[in-house]
Image (cartoon, rainbow, N blue to C red; front, side, top):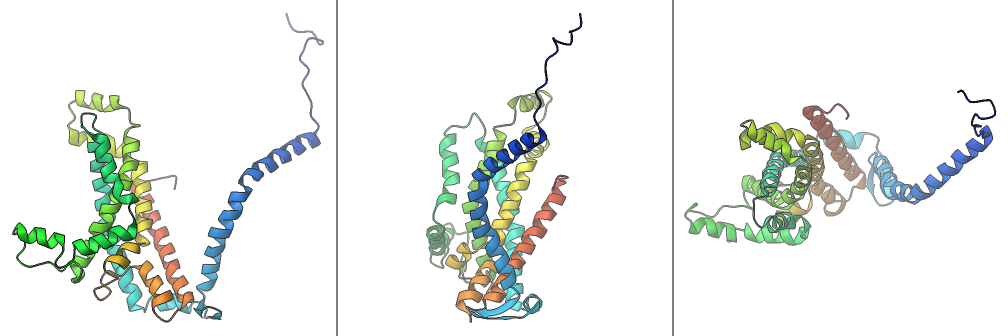
Length: 310
């Protein structure tokens, strides 16, 4: 039987003004939670970024700044020291980041094996370098890779080399030293991301692949890498950003030498601001060169990864 008119539920009616007030009240409550964070981020992130952009169109130090328009940006293309630092930084990026990503992937797969004993100890040992002091480990690397350091001593004792390698005095080997240092420090950091992602992959997928006769190598390329694609993209981007901002290792191990052979863009910014005759305007311009490079390489990585959501 159908409901009579008196039995039908009565719909509650709220006036439009009441609903609007309720929505505004909810909005104000929400903003009260995030207002402090938004304010602090605006003050300490966005405001300095805007000020640095304005500063990049000026020249000088302190209060003695004068507007020079785009002259600083034009100067970049004829600045041989900047071009050298750019070349060095891109070399670090193209060599070190892929090596570190591949190493982190391989190590994470090995440490995810349930049959491996002392997995916790190995994970801690590999992750430990990224929580050590930047300056402390850089100084240790400087002494280890010195002409009479531990590395040369070991290579000489095993008769691998006949003469000490100039790890810090030869332009090629100095770059290799920096690459080894940052790879040693940051591989464990990326490994943690991959290890976490691997533990979220259903183990039955690998069991099914084994039943179908897939080898360990086939499982790695056909299952592991596709499943980790978003994490690989993420770690590639943050590693790219970190490498383009590389400063501590170069400053403490080689000081940019020999002859600017290891100089990075970040160290050049420091030199312009504090080592040479201070020019904060031009330093800000070089800083925005890093921003442009980060955007360029990030977009490139999204395109290479085939990400359609970027």
